[in-house]
Image 1 (cartoon, one colour):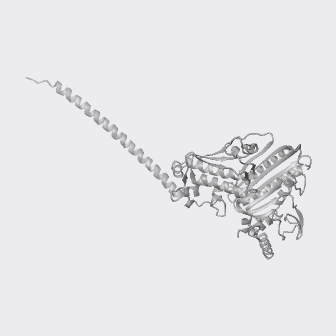
Image 2 (tube, rainbow, N blue to C red; image 1 turned 90 degrees about the vertical axis):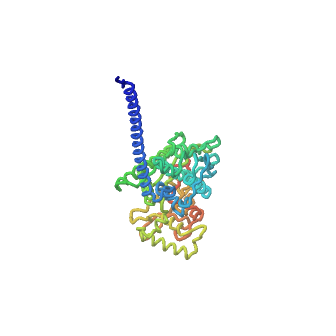
Image 3 (cartoon, helix red, strand yellow; image 1 turned 135 degrees about the horizontal axis):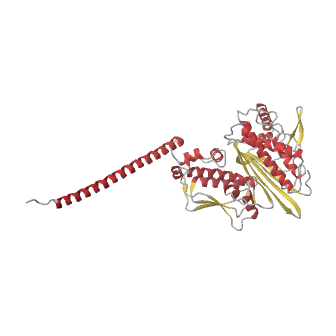
Length: 483
């Protein structure tokens, strides 16, 4: 009798299907694992490549090394110079963690000229917090600020601009961002109802809001001269750099002319041309002294009624970071050796007369003052050296009076630890130097550079400005303004 094999065949087929299904699933799992392993390997290789690239760039992959390598040039310069009030030894920093945010009150008088100790200290605290602490937001509170100097504000804004650029660069590299520890760091400007209206106007016309948040507001009484940043780095030719200087000169001259129109005054074509030449010379000087190859200028004009009179306030700041005027001339590589020799001889005469004082007057102060005189330049070019004193002379004459004293108008030059203030008390005089008749400003009654200047106008100060800043404040009335 023959036995049926059908049940056996059915069982076998079912077993085979089950086995094939398991094998297929196993193969799929194996394939998925291989693919996952391959991708993980590639990711590891990518990370290792990134890590190796960072090691090649930074040496040891640490936050201090990232700061030293990636900080933009201006903030890098002021934090690396041991003379600077903003020097930070990054190798010794210990990053602190703050929950939430950090708030700083802007000084009541925020000015590098009138309140230097508190203003420099405030800016340093902001810099240290932004670079050496981890938090979500830093707030600048202007509610107590009763006097806001545009020079101090632009100095702070340029620093913030560099630090924001550093943050952005870190954000584009996740491993660096993680190492740096930046989470949601940003800077805000707190505006309670008690913040003075004029502070808001500066911040929204040319200051922090206009620069960092692109929130510029038009005010009927203000003509802004927005922050102009010129960077010589990467310029392919001197011709292009000169072309940019001409553009910036014209822009600044047009701003001055528009400001004068607010006072119903115009410049003749000759005086306009002369103004452009003078401004161009000052901008060249600013570029030459800028170790970081950056030159900054900013300003505003505000007209107002003062005791029934139509008055105007003109503010202008030109600034650079780098070697000070004194350091430029004191450099052994300074190309203008004859001028340096004259400065040294003058220093010897001052030493003989015991004019130098640690608290009030130093060689640095003397050389900076001497460098402003007509015909003095650190470059080996006999055609140069006329910009600074003509710039001072021309801007003081914007109000139509020469050697005026109104108690408010002034132009101050800060360079290193030297403060030179032009307030109209002393004027520019002509002196015979050899066969030349040159303009000089000596800040003493006899107009003699070999006599010690008035310490109220020329002095050695405690705080070191890491570069040179020219800050002009001119107040004039329409009725006595003639050109």
